[in-house]
Image 1 (tube, rainbow, N blue to C red):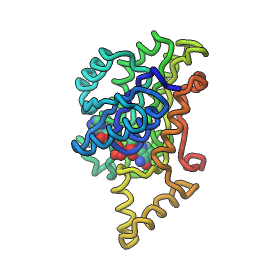
Image 2: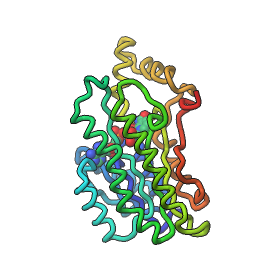
Image 3: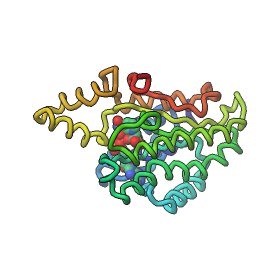
Image 4: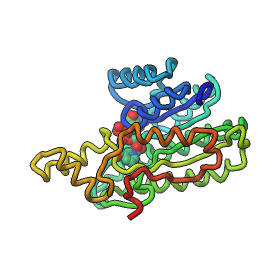
Length: 265
Ligand code: NAD
């Protein structure tokens, strides 16, 4: 159902973003992959997205902590055609109490997790509004809805992303029509998802259980996620895909939890 659409997925060289890029490609979209990593990792991600169905997928290797690099990327994309879907998925984490959080780490997390989404949106939304169709899906987190200790810049960035998305949803609400699909802006708010991002947190818990990784995972889940199950990246991608459907034209400004009940407590 996405044939003829072009989708930019930031942070799609790994984890959730890669699964989203694959799912959008399988639904027919032309996919632009973005993210960091080794040459092998990036080549493997591109190959996976192409194999999923986006045969002409290409890489935009912009470092999203640099607004000028984002602007240059969006300019290059504009020259290759309209960008119909933007999924802001790039994100980083650092855990420490506020008093021990390096100021430079705060700046970096806010830049990648929050400001980068502002920049892609400010550059992509006007075109979407003019064309009457557009989808922005921002991968926030349960930490855009509730807090946890030791995650000050992460929680601040994700609450900011939820607020930013609601403003954009309001500003674009009247664009397009039911037939064109309109322009919507939403957040998906995952709980624990099995990706490299959370490995350090699993390792810390595993260390408390004599190095047993499964016990570490169980301990993380027992604390906050009532389902007792981690999500797979492809589970999050399925929600993103739904938000991209024409039928979701009135689903905007939402922060959709995919968290096994975490934020229902
Ligand atoms: P991941 O580490 O597997 O992937 C992160 C991606 O972001 C990678 O592609 C990486 O290259 C990219 N990235 C990081 N810094 C970048 C930069 N400066 N410029 C460009 N790209 C950059 O992590 P993930 O778990 O897939 O996380 C994806 C998103 O999902 C993040 O925004 C994260 O906060 C969010 N999230 C993850 C979980 C979870 O449990 N894994 C839960 C809730 C929300």
